[in-house]
Length: 167
Image (tube, rainbow, N blue to C red; front, side, top):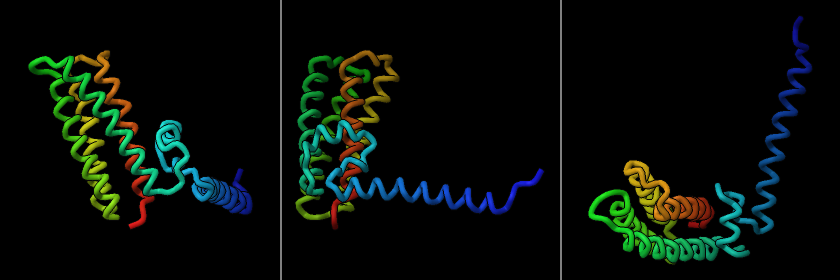
C-alpha cells in the first residue's frame, strides 16, 4: 500500500492553511483591540488591563496593578516572617521585584523596550525564585506561595504585553 502523492500534497496544503488561519485569527483579535491575545494568562490579563487598547497604557496599567499586588504580598510576608525559610526569601524577592517594576514604568515613559523587557524578566524571576524557595522549605500551603504564583502570572502577562510596545 502506497500513499498517493497528491493526497500528501493536499494534506500539507491543508495543514499550512489551517496554521495560517489561526495566526490570522490571533492577528485579527489583536487588531480589534484585544492585546491579551499575546498573554499566557489572557483572562487574568483582560481583568487587569480593563479594556485598554493602547499598548503602552495597557502595559503601564498591568505593571501598576502588579506593583499593588506585590506590595500586598510583601505586607503579608512581613507578618509571616521567620528568621529563615521561604518567606524570608520571598520578602527579599518581592522588594527586588518592586524595584524592577518601578524601573519598568520608567522604561515605558522613555520608550526603552529593551530595558523594559529586562526589568520585567527580572521581576518574573523574582517571583519564580520565591515559589522555588517556598517549595524547598515545604511551605506550599502558605498564602505567600500562592500569592507568588499569581504574581508570576501577572508578570508573565506584563512581559507579553511589553513585546507589543513600540520602540
